[in-house]
Length: 246
Length: 246
DNA sequence: CGTTTTTTTGATAATAATCAAATTATGTGG
DNA sequence: CCACATAATTTGATTATTATCAAAAAAACG
Image 1 (cartoon, helix red, strand yellow):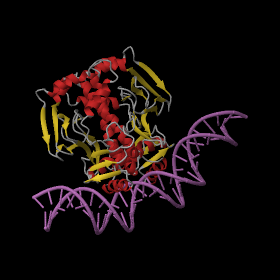
Image 2 (cartoon, each protein chain N blue to C red; image 1 turned 120 degrees about the horizontal axis):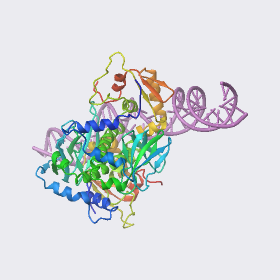
Image 3 (spheres, rainbow over the protein chains, first blue to last red; image 1 turned 60 degrees about the horizontal axis):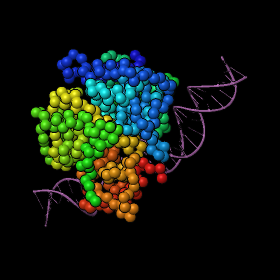
Image 4 (tube, chains in turn blue, red, green, brown; image 1 turned 90 degrees about the horizontal axis):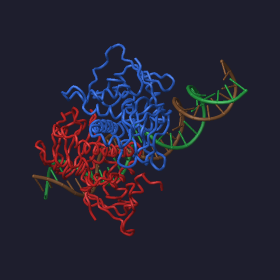
Protein backbone atom coordinates (compact mmCIF):
# COMPACT_ATOMS: atom_id res chain seq x y z
CA UNK A 1 0.00 0.00 0.00
CA UNK A 2 1.35 3.38 -0.95
CA UNK A 3 -0.14 6.81 -0.57
CA UNK A 4 1.07 10.34 -0.99
CA UNK A 5 1.56 12.69 1.90
CA UNK A 6 -1.38 14.76 0.74
CA UNK A 7 -4.45 12.64 0.84
CA UNK A 8 -6.67 12.71 -2.15
CA UNK A 9 -9.47 11.72 0.15
CA UNK A 10 -9.31 14.54 2.62
CA UNK A 11 -12.11 16.52 1.05
CA UNK A 12 -14.26 13.43 1.12
CA UNK A 13 -13.39 12.80 4.75
CA UNK A 14 -14.42 16.28 5.77
CA UNK A 15 -17.67 15.86 3.93
CA UNK A 16 -18.54 12.53 5.50
CA UNK A 17 -17.65 13.55 9.02
CA UNK A 18 -19.73 16.66 8.59
CA UNK A 19 -22.64 14.52 7.57
CA UNK A 20 -22.34 11.99 10.32
CA UNK A 21 -24.22 14.28 12.68
CA UNK A 22 -26.96 15.07 10.22
CA UNK A 23 -29.95 12.97 9.35
CA UNK A 24 -30.51 14.71 6.01
CA UNK A 25 -29.24 12.66 3.11
CA UNK A 26 -26.75 15.07 1.58
CA UNK A 27 -24.55 17.97 2.59
CA UNK A 28 -26.47 21.18 2.47
CA UNK A 29 -23.89 23.78 1.59
CA UNK A 30 -21.98 21.61 -0.85
CA UNK A 31 -24.48 21.88 -3.66
CA UNK A 32 -24.05 25.62 -3.53
CA UNK A 33 -20.31 25.15 -3.46
CA UNK A 34 -20.47 22.85 -6.45
CA UNK A 35 -22.30 25.53 -8.42
CA UNK A 36 -19.68 28.08 -7.40
CA UNK A 37 -17.08 25.85 -9.01
CA UNK A 38 -18.83 26.53 -12.31
CA UNK A 39 -19.40 30.24 -11.71
CA UNK A 40 -18.43 32.98 -14.16
CA UNK A 41 -15.53 34.33 -12.14
CA UNK A 42 -14.10 30.92 -11.25
CA UNK A 43 -11.05 29.77 -13.17
CA UNK A 44 -8.70 26.82 -13.04
CA UNK A 45 -5.04 27.55 -12.54
CA UNK A 46 -1.94 25.37 -12.64
CA UNK A 47 1.30 26.07 -10.81
CA UNK A 48 4.76 24.56 -10.95
CA UNK A 49 6.44 23.25 -7.81
CA UNK A 50 7.55 26.05 -5.45
CA UNK A 51 5.57 28.72 -7.25
CA UNK A 52 4.41 31.57 -5.06
CA UNK A 53 0.64 31.95 -5.29
CA UNK A 54 0.56 35.16 -3.29
CA UNK A 55 2.64 37.01 -0.74
CA UNK A 56 1.79 38.00 2.78
CA UNK A 57 0.36 41.52 2.59
CA UNK A 58 -1.01 41.15 -0.95
CA UNK A 59 -4.57 42.24 -1.41
CA UNK A 60 -6.89 39.29 -0.92
CA UNK A 61 -9.05 39.10 -4.02
CA UNK A 62 -9.44 35.38 -4.47
CA UNK A 63 -10.18 32.18 -2.68
CA UNK A 64 -8.36 29.01 -3.70
CA UNK A 65 -9.32 25.35 -3.60
CA UNK A 66 -6.67 22.77 -4.30
CA UNK A 67 -7.75 20.25 -6.93
CA UNK A 68 -4.50 18.30 -7.06
CA UNK A 69 -1.06 18.83 -5.61
CA UNK A 70 -0.14 20.54 -2.38
CA UNK A 71 0.65 23.96 -0.98
CA UNK A 72 1.85 25.60 2.20
CA UNK A 73 1.09 28.85 3.98
CA UNK A 74 3.92 30.54 5.82
CA UNK A 75 4.86 33.69 7.65
CA UNK A 76 8.26 35.34 7.90
CA UNK A 77 9.85 37.31 10.70
CA UNK A 78 11.89 40.33 9.58
CA UNK A 79 15.17 38.56 10.35
CA UNK A 80 14.27 35.71 8.00
CA UNK A 81 12.93 33.12 10.41
CA UNK A 82 10.08 31.30 8.71
CA UNK A 83 7.14 29.41 10.13
CA UNK A 84 5.06 27.24 7.85
CA UNK A 85 1.62 27.49 9.43
CA UNK A 86 -0.39 25.15 7.22
CA UNK A 87 0.21 22.33 4.79
CA UNK A 88 -2.71 21.87 2.43
CA UNK A 89 -3.87 19.16 0.04
CA UNK A 90 -6.72 18.44 -2.38
CA UNK A 91 -10.07 19.79 -1.23
CA UNK A 92 -8.49 22.30 1.14
CA UNK A 93 -9.43 25.97 0.87
CA UNK A 94 -7.06 28.85 1.45
CA UNK A 95 -6.75 32.57 0.87
CA UNK A 96 -10.04 33.21 2.60
CA UNK A 97 -8.68 36.09 4.56
CA UNK A 98 -11.07 37.97 2.39
CA UNK A 99 -11.40 41.10 4.46
CA UNK A 100 -8.29 42.98 3.44
CA UNK A 101 -4.87 41.45 2.94
CA UNK A 102 -3.40 37.97 3.05
CA UNK A 103 -1.89 37.26 6.44
CA UNK A 104 0.43 34.59 5.03
CA UNK A 105 2.31 33.79 1.88
CA UNK A 106 1.13 30.80 -0.14
CA UNK A 107 3.48 28.59 -2.11
CA UNK A 108 3.06 25.27 -3.86
CA UNK A 109 5.08 22.28 -2.68
CA UNK A 110 4.67 20.30 -5.89
CA UNK A 111 3.02 21.07 -9.21
CA UNK A 112 -0.53 21.93 -8.35
CA UNK A 113 -3.91 22.65 -9.89
CA UNK A 114 -6.27 24.95 -8.04
CA UNK A 115 -9.68 26.49 -8.54
CA UNK A 116 -9.60 30.24 -8.11
CA UNK A 117 -12.85 31.80 -6.92
CA UNK A 118 -13.46 35.50 -7.01
CA UNK A 119 -14.34 37.21 -3.77
CA UNK A 120 -17.49 38.64 -5.31
CA UNK A 121 -18.90 35.24 -6.18
CA UNK A 122 -18.22 33.72 -2.81
CA UNK A 123 -19.67 36.66 -0.93
CA UNK A 124 -22.75 36.65 -3.11
CA UNK A 125 -23.57 33.05 -2.32
CA UNK A 126 -24.93 32.85 1.20
CA UNK A 127 -25.45 29.13 0.80
CA UNK A 128 -21.75 28.62 0.08
CA UNK A 129 -20.94 30.25 3.41
CA UNK A 130 -21.70 27.07 5.28
CA UNK A 131 -19.07 25.20 3.29
CA UNK A 132 -16.68 28.03 4.02
CA UNK A 133 -17.47 27.90 7.71
CA UNK A 134 -16.87 24.17 7.83
CA UNK A 135 -13.50 24.56 6.12
CA UNK A 136 -12.48 27.36 8.45
CA UNK A 137 -13.43 25.25 11.46
CA UNK A 138 -11.47 22.33 10.11
CA UNK A 139 -8.45 24.60 9.85
CA UNK A 140 -8.95 25.81 13.40
CA UNK A 141 -8.92 22.17 14.52
CA UNK A 142 -5.74 21.48 12.60
CA UNK A 143 -4.13 24.58 14.07
CA UNK A 144 -5.02 23.48 17.59
CA UNK A 145 -3.25 20.19 17.05
CA UNK A 146 -0.31 21.99 15.56
CA UNK A 147 -0.09 24.34 18.54
CA UNK A 148 0.24 21.29 20.79
CA UNK A 149 2.98 19.96 18.55
CA UNK A 150 4.87 23.26 18.49
CA UNK A 151 4.38 24.15 22.12
CA UNK A 152 4.72 20.85 23.90
CA UNK A 153 6.25 18.11 21.79
CA UNK A 154 9.90 17.06 21.50
CA UNK A 155 11.71 17.00 18.17
CA UNK A 156 11.25 13.23 18.00
CA UNK A 157 7.53 13.49 18.71
CA UNK A 158 7.13 16.26 16.14
CA UNK A 159 8.65 14.26 13.33
CA UNK A 160 6.70 11.13 14.31
CA UNK A 161 3.47 13.15 14.41
CA UNK A 162 4.25 14.66 11.04
CA UNK A 163 4.74 11.27 9.42
CA UNK A 164 1.65 9.79 11.06
CA UNK A 165 -0.43 12.65 9.71
CA UNK A 166 -0.12 11.17 6.25
CA UNK A 167 -1.10 7.63 7.17
CA UNK A 168 -4.82 7.24 6.39
CA UNK A 169 -7.15 6.09 9.16
CA UNK A 170 -4.36 5.74 11.70
CA UNK A 171 -3.27 7.79 14.66
CA UNK A 172 -6.63 9.53 14.94
CA UNK A 173 -9.17 8.96 17.67
CA UNK A 174 -10.92 6.52 15.36
CA UNK A 175 -7.83 4.36 14.82
CA UNK A 176 -8.74 0.68 14.89
CA UNK A 177 -5.16 -0.56 14.88
CA UNK A 178 -3.53 -2.47 12.04
CA UNK A 179 -5.79 -4.42 9.73
CA UNK A 180 -3.07 -7.07 9.44
CA UNK A 181 -1.24 -7.62 12.71
CA UNK A 182 1.87 -9.04 11.03
CA UNK A 183 2.23 -6.46 8.29
CA UNK A 184 1.69 -2.99 9.61
CA UNK A 185 3.71 -1.20 6.96
CA UNK A 186 2.97 2.04 5.17
CA UNK A 187 4.62 4.32 2.66
CA UNK A 188 4.62 8.10 2.82
CA UNK A 189 5.69 10.22 -0.10
CA UNK A 190 7.16 13.40 1.37
CA UNK A 191 6.39 16.28 -0.92
CA UNK A 192 8.44 18.65 1.19
CA UNK A 193 12.13 19.38 1.52
CA UNK A 194 13.83 19.02 4.89
CA UNK A 195 13.83 22.79 5.18
CA UNK A 196 10.09 22.97 4.62
CA UNK A 197 9.52 20.22 7.16
CA UNK A 198 11.78 22.00 9.65
CA UNK A 199 9.95 25.29 9.16
CA UNK A 200 6.63 23.53 9.66
CA UNK A 201 7.75 21.67 12.78
CA UNK A 202 9.54 24.59 14.41
CA UNK A 203 12.92 22.83 14.19
CA UNK A 204 16.15 23.22 12.24
CA UNK A 205 16.94 21.22 9.15
CA UNK A 206 19.73 19.42 11.01
CA UNK A 207 17.45 18.31 13.82
CA UNK A 208 14.88 16.95 11.37
CA UNK A 209 17.60 15.07 9.54
CA UNK A 210 19.04 13.67 12.76
CA UNK A 211 15.66 12.44 13.99
CA UNK A 212 14.95 10.74 10.66
CA UNK A 213 18.38 9.10 10.72
CA UNK A 214 17.76 7.92 14.25
CA UNK A 215 14.38 6.43 13.35
CA UNK A 216 16.12 4.65 10.49
CA UNK A 217 18.83 3.34 12.82
CA UNK A 218 16.18 2.09 15.26
CA UNK A 219 14.32 0.30 12.48
CA UNK A 220 11.13 2.33 12.77
CA UNK A 221 11.33 3.59 9.20
CA UNK A 222 13.30 3.02 6.01
CA UNK A 223 14.08 5.59 3.33
CA UNK A 224 13.96 5.51 -0.42
CA UNK A 225 15.58 8.50 -2.07
CA UNK A 226 15.18 10.95 0.86
CA UNK A 227 11.58 11.72 0.10
CA UNK A 228 9.90 8.35 0.37
CA UNK A 229 9.47 6.97 3.87
CA UNK A 230 8.57 3.35 4.46
CA UNK A 231 7.14 2.88 7.92
CA UNK A 232 7.99 -0.60 9.15
CA UNK A 233 5.41 -0.77 11.92
CA UNK A 234 2.89 2.02 11.93
CA UNK A 235 1.92 1.31 15.54
CA UNK A 236 5.53 1.73 16.68
CA UNK A 237 5.78 5.09 14.98
CA UNK A 238 2.47 6.13 16.49
CA UNK A 239 3.84 5.39 19.97
CA UNK A 240 6.49 8.01 19.36
CA UNK A 241 4.07 10.86 18.70
CA UNK A 242 3.43 11.67 22.36
CA UNK A 243 -0.30 11.17 21.83
CA UNK A 244 -0.32 7.80 23.60
CA UNK A 245 -0.23 7.03 27.28
CA UNK A 246 2.21 4.11 27.17
CA UNK B 1 -4.34 54.74 31.00
CA UNK B 2 -5.23 51.26 32.16
CA UNK B 3 -6.87 48.39 30.35
CA UNK B 4 -7.48 44.76 31.02
CA UNK B 5 -5.71 42.03 29.16
CA UNK B 6 -8.96 41.09 27.49
CA UNK B 7 -10.10 43.97 25.43
CA UNK B 8 -13.67 44.95 25.77
CA UNK B 9 -13.39 46.42 22.34
CA UNK B 10 -12.28 43.36 20.45
CA UNK B 11 -15.71 42.49 19.17
CA UNK B 12 -16.09 46.04 17.95
CA UNK B 13 -12.70 45.91 16.27
CA UNK B 14 -13.55 42.78 14.38
CA UNK B 15 -16.77 44.33 13.23
CA UNK B 16 -15.24 47.55 12.01
CA UNK B 17 -12.38 45.86 10.17
CA UNK B 18 -14.87 43.59 8.51
CA UNK B 19 -16.79 46.59 7.34
CA UNK B 20 -13.87 48.53 6.04
CA UNK B 21 -13.91 46.58 2.81
CA UNK B 22 -17.63 46.92 2.28
CA UNK B 23 -19.51 49.88 0.88
CA UNK B 24 -22.79 48.85 2.44
CA UNK B 25 -23.60 50.85 5.54
CA UNK B 26 -23.87 48.05 8.08
CA UNK B 27 -22.60 44.52 8.67
CA UNK B 28 -24.76 42.06 6.85
CA UNK B 29 -24.60 38.96 8.99
CA UNK B 30 -24.63 40.78 12.29
CA UNK B 31 -28.30 41.62 12.27
CA UNK B 32 -29.01 37.94 11.98
CA UNK B 33 -26.57 37.28 14.78
CA UNK B 34 -28.22 39.92 16.92
CA UNK B 35 -31.56 38.18 16.49
CA UNK B 36 -29.96 34.87 17.43
CA UNK B 37 -28.93 36.45 20.70
CA UNK B 38 -32.61 36.75 21.51
CA UNK B 39 -33.60 33.34 20.19
CA UNK B 40 -35.62 30.77 22.13
CA UNK B 41 -32.74 28.38 22.76
CA UNK B 42 -30.26 31.08 23.70
CA UNK B 43 -29.50 31.55 27.38
CA UNK B 44 -27.13 33.63 29.43
CA UNK B 45 -24.75 31.80 31.73
CA UNK B 46 -22.31 32.99 34.37
CA UNK B 47 -19.20 31.13 35.48
CA UNK B 48 -16.77 31.60 38.33
CA UNK B 49 -13.05 31.91 37.70
CA UNK B 50 -11.44 28.63 36.59
CA UNK B 51 -14.74 26.91 35.96
CA UNK B 52 -14.65 24.25 33.28
CA UNK B 53 -17.21 25.02 30.58
CA UNK B 54 -16.70 21.73 28.78
CA UNK B 55 -14.10 19.02 28.39
CA UNK B 56 -12.30 17.87 25.33
CA UNK B 57 -14.32 14.98 23.91
CA UNK B 58 -17.67 16.19 25.26
CA UNK B 59 -20.47 16.25 22.77
CA UNK B 60 -20.65 19.66 21.13
CA UNK B 61 -24.20 20.88 21.60
CA UNK B 62 -23.69 24.58 22.10
CA UNK B 63 -21.88 27.59 20.80
CA UNK B 64 -20.62 30.21 23.25
CA UNK B 65 -20.07 33.94 22.98
CA UNK B 66 -18.23 35.71 25.76
CA UNK B 67 -20.11 38.74 27.02
CA UNK B 68 -17.68 39.67 29.76
CA UNK B 69 -14.68 37.99 31.31
CA UNK B 70 -12.21 35.65 29.64
CA UNK B 71 -11.69 32.00 28.85
CA UNK B 72 -9.08 29.68 27.41
CA UNK B 73 -9.17 26.58 25.26
CA UNK B 74 -6.58 23.92 25.92
CA UNK B 75 -5.56 20.40 24.99
CA UNK B 76 -3.82 17.81 27.13
CA UNK B 77 -1.36 15.11 26.20
CA UNK B 78 -1.83 11.80 28.06
CA UNK B 79 1.24 12.42 30.22
CA UNK B 80 -0.21 15.68 31.48
CA UNK B 81 1.51 18.21 29.26
CA UNK B 82 -0.93 20.99 28.50
CA UNK B 83 -1.11 23.47 25.64
CA UNK B 84 -3.44 26.44 25.88
CA UNK B 85 -4.41 26.98 22.25
CA UNK B 86 -6.58 30.08 22.54
CA UNK B 87 -7.19 32.91 24.95
CA UNK B 88 -10.59 34.50 24.41
CA UNK B 89 -12.26 37.72 25.47
CA UNK B 90 -15.57 39.56 25.04
CA UNK B 91 -17.14 39.10 21.61
CA UNK B 92 -15.17 35.96 20.89
CA UNK B 93 -17.01 32.79 19.89
CA UNK B 94 -15.97 29.30 20.86
CA UNK B 95 -17.29 25.77 20.97
CA UNK B 96 -18.18 25.89 17.31
CA UNK B 97 -16.71 22.50 16.64
CA UNK B 98 -20.32 21.67 16.09
CA UNK B 99 -19.85 18.57 14.01
CA UNK B 100 -19.32 16.00 16.73
CA UNK B 101 -17.20 16.51 19.81
CA UNK B 102 -15.22 19.36 21.30
CA UNK B 103 -11.57 19.16 20.29
CA UNK B 104 -10.46 21.19 23.31
CA UNK B 105 -11.41 21.83 26.87
CA UNK B 106 -12.76 25.27 27.72
CA UNK B 107 -12.15 26.96 31.06
CA UNK B 108 -12.75 30.45 32.35
CA UNK B 109 -9.77 32.54 33.46
CA UNK B 110 -11.82 34.97 35.53
CA UNK B 111 -15.51 35.17 36.38
CA UNK B 112 -17.28 35.26 33.07
CA UNK B 113 -20.67 35.76 31.49
CA UNK B 114 -21.41 34.02 28.21
CA UNK B 115 -24.27 33.62 25.80
CA UNK B 116 -25.01 29.98 25.07
CA UNK B 117 -26.53 29.30 21.67
CA UNK B 118 -28.04 25.98 20.78
CA UNK B 119 -26.67 24.17 17.77
CA UNK B 120 -30.13 23.92 16.26
CA UNK B 121 -30.65 27.68 16.23
CA UNK B 122 -27.29 28.49 14.73
CA UNK B 123 -27.63 25.87 12.03
CA UNK B 124 -31.12 27.05 11.16
CA UNK B 125 -29.99 30.60 10.52
CA UNK B 126 -28.12 30.71 7.24
CA UNK B 127 -27.66 34.45 7.62
CA UNK B 128 -25.82 33.96 10.90
CA UNK B 129 -23.31 31.73 9.11
CA UNK B 130 -21.45 34.72 7.75
CA UNK B 131 -20.81 35.99 11.25
CA UNK B 132 -19.66 32.52 12.18
CA UNK B 133 -17.35 32.37 9.18
CA UNK B 134 -15.83 35.71 10.05
CA UNK B 135 -15.16 34.60 13.62
CA UNK B 136 -13.63 31.33 12.48
CA UNK B 137 -11.36 33.20 10.07
CA UNK B 138 -10.32 35.58 12.80
CA UNK B 139 -9.35 32.59 14.91
CA UNK B 140 -7.37 31.11 12.04
CA UNK B 141 -5.47 34.41 11.81
CA UNK B 142 -4.75 34.40 15.52
CA UNK B 143 -3.60 30.79 15.35
CA UNK B 144 -1.20 31.61 12.51
CA UNK B 145 0.42 34.28 14.63
CA UNK B 146 0.57 31.94 17.55
CA UNK B 147 2.23 29.24 15.44
CA UNK B 148 4.99 31.72 14.61
CA UNK B 149 5.36 32.49 18.29
CA UNK B 150 5.50 28.82 19.30
CA UNK B 151 7.63 27.63 16.42
CA UNK B 152 10.13 30.42 15.94
CA UNK B 153 10.29 32.85 18.84
CA UNK B 154 12.58 32.81 21.88
CA UNK B 155 11.24 32.78 25.42
CA UNK B 156 11.93 36.50 25.70
CA UNK B 157 10.14 37.26 22.44
CA UNK B 158 7.17 35.10 23.46
CA UNK B 159 6.59 36.93 26.70
CA UNK B 160 7.06 40.33 25.03
CA UNK B 161 4.60 39.36 22.29
CA UNK B 162 2.12 38.15 24.89
CA UNK B 163 2.22 41.43 26.77
CA UNK B 164 2.00 43.51 23.58
CA UNK B 165 -1.09 41.62 22.54
CA UNK B 166 -3.05 43.38 25.25
CA UNK B 167 -1.93 46.89 24.41
CA UNK B 168 -4.62 48.44 22.20
CA UNK B 169 -3.65 49.84 18.81
CA UNK B 170 0.02 49.05 19.26
CA UNK B 171 2.28 46.39 17.84
CA UNK B 172 -0.04 45.67 14.93
CA UNK B 173 0.61 46.60 11.33
CA UNK B 174 -1.47 49.71 11.90
CA UNK B 175 0.62 50.92 14.82
CA UNK B 176 1.19 54.67 14.61
CA UNK B 177 3.74 54.80 17.42
CA UNK B 178 3.18 56.51 20.78
CA UNK B 179 0.66 59.33 20.90
CA UNK B 180 2.85 61.08 23.46
CA UNK B 181 6.56 60.62 22.74
CA UNK B 182 7.61 61.29 26.34
CA UNK B 183 5.05 59.11 28.05
CA UNK B 184 4.68 55.81 26.30
CA UNK B 185 3.42 53.86 29.29
CA UNK B 186 0.70 51.26 29.49
CA UNK B 187 -0.83 48.94 32.05
CA UNK B 188 -1.82 45.36 31.44
CA UNK B 189 -3.96 43.44 33.87
CA UNK B 190 -2.93 39.79 33.56
CA UNK B 191 -5.92 37.61 34.10
CA UNK B 192 -3.82 34.48 33.92
CA UNK B 193 -1.57 32.66 36.35
CA UNK B 194 2.07 32.05 35.46
CA UNK B 195 1.16 28.44 34.76
CA UNK B 196 -1.55 29.44 32.30
CA UNK B 197 0.80 31.86 30.59
CA UNK B 198 3.49 29.19 30.38
CA UNK B 199 1.05 26.68 28.91
CA UNK B 200 -0.07 29.25 26.37
CA UNK B 201 3.47 30.26 25.39
CA UNK B 202 4.91 26.75 25.26
CA UNK B 203 7.29 27.44 28.15
CA UNK B 204 7.68 26.40 31.77
CA UNK B 205 6.47 28.47 34.65
CA UNK B 206 10.06 29.08 35.74
CA UNK B 207 11.09 30.44 32.35
CA UNK B 208 8.12 32.82 32.25
CA UNK B 209 8.96 34.04 35.74
CA UNK B 210 12.63 34.52 34.86
CA UNK B 211 11.85 36.50 31.70
CA UNK B 212 9.48 38.77 33.59
CA UNK B 213 12.08 39.30 36.33
CA UNK B 214 14.66 40.12 33.70
CA UNK B 215 12.38 42.64 31.98
CA UNK B 216 11.85 44.22 35.38
CA UNK B 217 15.59 44.33 36.03
CA UNK B 218 16.17 45.96 32.63
CA UNK B 219 13.50 48.60 33.33
CA UNK B 220 11.19 47.56 30.51
CA UNK B 221 8.31 46.79 32.82
CA UNK B 222 7.29 47.19 36.45
CA UNK B 223 5.01 44.89 38.44
CA UNK B 224 2.19 45.53 40.82
CA UNK B 225 1.06 42.46 42.72
CA UNK B 226 2.28 39.84 40.19
CA UNK B 227 -0.68 40.25 37.89
CA UNK B 228 -0.51 43.91 36.93
CA UNK B 229 2.23 44.86 34.49
CA UNK B 230 3.18 48.48 33.92
CA UNK B 231 5.03 48.88 30.65
CA UNK B 232 7.47 51.75 30.94
CA UNK B 233 8.00 52.30 27.24
CA UNK B 234 5.67 50.38 24.98
CA UNK B 235 7.96 50.85 21.99
CA UNK B 236 10.86 49.25 23.85
CA UNK B 237 8.77 46.23 24.71
CA UNK B 238 7.59 46.01 21.12
CA UNK B 239 11.20 45.84 19.94
CA UNK B 240 11.59 42.66 21.97
CA UNK B 241 8.79 40.75 20.23
CA UNK B 242 10.87 39.67 17.24
CA UNK B 243 8.39 41.31 14.89
CA UNK B 244 10.67 44.27 14.16
CA UNK B 245 13.68 44.47 11.90
CA UNK B 246 15.94 46.54 14.17
C1' DC C 1 -1.54 34.86 62.27
C1' DG C 2 -0.39 30.57 60.64
C1' DT C 3 -1.22 27.68 56.50
C1' DT C 4 -1.33 26.93 51.77
C1' DT C 5 -0.51 28.25 47.25
C1' DT C 6 1.94 30.80 43.88
C1' DT C 7 5.95 32.92 42.36
C1' DT C 8 10.78 33.66 42.27
C1' DT C 9 15.55 32.33 42.36
C1' DG C 10 19.48 29.12 42.06
C1' DA C 11 22.15 25.06 40.36
C1' DT C 12 22.38 21.59 37.04
C1' DA C 13 20.93 18.78 33.09
C1' DA C 14 18.86 17.97 28.71
C1' DT C 15 17.45 19.28 24.31
C1' DA C 16 17.97 21.41 20.22
C1' DA C 17 20.60 25.19 17.75
C1' DT C 18 24.71 26.61 15.59
C1' DC C 19 28.87 26.15 13.07
C1' DA C 20 31.53 23.32 10.03
C1' DA C 21 32.45 19.68 6.95
C1' DA C 22 31.47 15.46 4.50
C1' DT C 23 28.39 12.89 1.81
C1' DT C 24 24.73 12.05 -1.24
C1' DA C 25 21.52 13.45 -4.75
C1' DT C 26 20.24 16.28 -8.79
C1' DG C 27 20.91 18.48 -12.98
C1' DT C 28 23.61 19.80 -17.25
C1' DG C 29 26.36 19.73 -21.20
C1' DG C 30 29.51 17.08 -23.74
C1' DC D 1 25.73 7.76 -20.62
C1' DC D 2 29.13 9.94 -18.00
C1' DA D 3 31.95 13.74 -15.74
C1' DC D 4 31.31 17.79 -13.50
C1' DA D 5 28.91 21.39 -10.99
C1' DT D 6 25.39 22.55 -7.86
C1' DA D 7 22.11 21.78 -4.38
C1' DA D 8 20.27 19.09 -0.62
C1' DT D 9 21.05 16.15 3.10
C1' DT D 10 23.62 14.04 6.66
C1' DT D 11 26.96 13.82 10.29
C1' DG D 12 30.09 15.71 13.87
C1' DA D 13 31.64 18.97 17.55
C1' DT D 14 30.33 22.59 20.35
C1' DT D 15 27.36 26.09 22.29
C1' DA D 16 23.09 28.16 23.75
C1' DT D 17 18.67 27.97 25.44
C1' DT D 18 15.33 26.26 28.14
C1' DA D 19 13.78 22.41 31.20
C1' DT D 20 14.24 20.16 35.47
C1' DC D 21 15.04 19.72 40.26
C1' DA D 22 15.26 22.03 44.64
C1' DA D 23 14.56 25.60 47.83
C1' DA D 24 13.42 30.27 49.31
C1' DA D 25 10.38 34.16 49.19
C1' DA D 26 6.10 36.36 48.54
C1' DA D 27 1.21 36.46 48.22
C1' DA D 28 -3.40 34.75 49.16
C1' DC D 29 -6.64 32.75 52.24
C1' DG D 30 -9.21 31.31 56.04
